[in-house]
Structure formats: structure tokens, C-alpha cells
Image (spheres, rainbow, N blue to C red):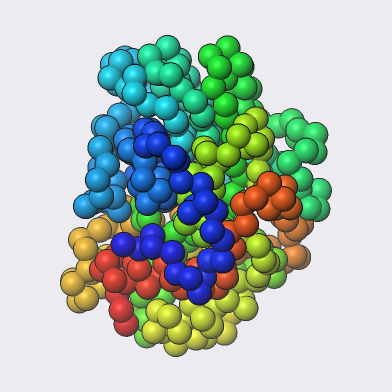
Length: 382
């Protein structure tokens, strides 16, 4: 399985130390997504009973001993019916998210914010009445520090004052704080930074985007140059680390009521990583060539269809492969930006001092998931 931790990449042992002494049942909400899939694998590896809730069966959980619960979180009646059969659930990891087409502009949209708030309420209101919940984990990110609207404090720390701006994170955080106090369960908030993993068709995962771009450039006889703008120093987090952190938070009493940033533990720049990505994908490295991947890839759907046939790939249309992640790529690569953007750095001292110390080499992590996409015939081996 792709989630078996490579000892050369991860030095942490938190997941082994955090195994539950007695089997508990965790409901992973949004299990077909990037964090949901990883969390399900991590809990299964730790010996838990796992219920994977999502609208479609999670492809990357095939063959694992977990129950799939088909569920549309926007359907309040469906959530009530589902909750009635979940009285044995003790823990929840809520990773579901609703995004609008184009992604970035939707982050401050009132419809996007309210829909995400309602989805959480639709599930948790009836579930808190039916189940004897012990712990709930919810996910946020650097938008919590105002990274989408302006410069962040460096580094961003969990205890800094809330940056007030339109964002569904605050709906989730305020709701789960009140609900946990009323119903007697604990909660933890995790804030990962630029998650990297194997899922395609999701809203924010770069390996499928970069892999498709490389394959199309190769097919057109063009070099694989970095498509972005100004240098931008980044932090990232391997999705396996996030999954392990979910298990750790669910089993550590000291994590109750706490918020933790998550990264791999280092910084990097995309230009410096680009040669390793090119080598992994088997394409010729080229000079920088600013390109909007959101536009470039959308214009080459027919080219991708030819590549799928030529290499015998899974018959996934290009837009289904990308999800909304091509828009995310333009932002991460600073396409069209001439001056280095403000740094987006978060401190991970708090969670390390609390006992969770997993780390990953970001370059090896990115290339690992590219190879996994090739192995699964989602991307071609060129």
C-alpha cells in the first residue's frame, strides 16, 4: 500500500506509540479526499475500526478492512438517518470541504462559507445525540492566519489572535467548541500546510497537476520548465504525517482543546525541487517558462486523452484528474507574480513539544507520490 511509511522519509514514531489500547471506532468524514484517505489508513494501521464516509467509494481504501458509508453532507435528512446507525462511533475526523469552481476566489464567498458550516452541523447535530463521542478532529490551514488576504506573522503560531476575515474555519471552530462543551467530547484542530499525497480529482493536491503538465510537455516535444513566477519559499506536509497526527490527537489527552500546525519540518523552493521532479517523471528539464497551468491544461484535454491511450493509463479525463488543483498550482507557483510573495511560515514547535515529532523530506515526499501515481497508472512512466 502507498501509505506504508518509508523509514528513509519519516523519523517519527508517534503512530506506533499512539495505538489505542482497546479497539475504538472512528468515523472519517470526507474519506475519499486527501486527508480523509490518509487518516483512514493511519487508523486502520493502528488497529481501529474505521467507517469511511464519502459520496463516492474511496479508491485508495480498496482492499482495506473498513466500512464505506455513502453520505452527502449537504443532505440533512441523509445525515440524520446515517447518524442513527452510528451509535458505536467514539471518534470523528472531519476532513470534508466544499469548494467553488476556480477555488481561490471562492474562499471568501458567503455561499462557500455557509455551505461548509452547514455540512458540519448536518452531521454533528444528530451524531452528538446518537453516539457517545469521545473526540473530534477538524482541519484548518494557513487561511486561519489570514494568508489568503495579506501578509501573515512569521512564524504563525497557534496562540496568536484570530485574524478576522470571511472564512468557514471560524464557523467550524466556534461550532465544535460549543458542541463539545455541551456534549462532553474533546476536540483537536489541525492546521497542515500545503498537503502532498496520492489523490487525484481533489481540490488542492499538486502531484497530479505537475505530472500531467510534464506528460503533456513531453508529448508535445517541449521541455519541462518551471511554470511559475517569483521565488517563493514554502513549507509542505506529507499526507501520511497528517494521517498519523490524526491518530495521535485522538489518543493523547493533552491534545484536547488544542490547535496544532503541521509541516514536514523544513522549507524549500519549487525551482530547487524541479530537477528532482523532472528526473522522477523522466522528462527533459528546461528553462523557466511562465505558464498558467489552469489555462494551459484546460486547453489540452484532447492531448491528455491521447496520452492515456498511448500509455494504457486509467481512463481518467484530464479535468477529473485535476479537480480544482490546477488553480491551486498557479497560486503555489506564484504564476504572474514578479516580486517574492510574503512568507507563509508556520511554527510547529507546539506539536513537537507535545510529543508528535514526525518529519519528512519534502522533495522525497513529492517524488514518492509522483512514483505512486505512475505505479497506479494515473500518470505515465515516460
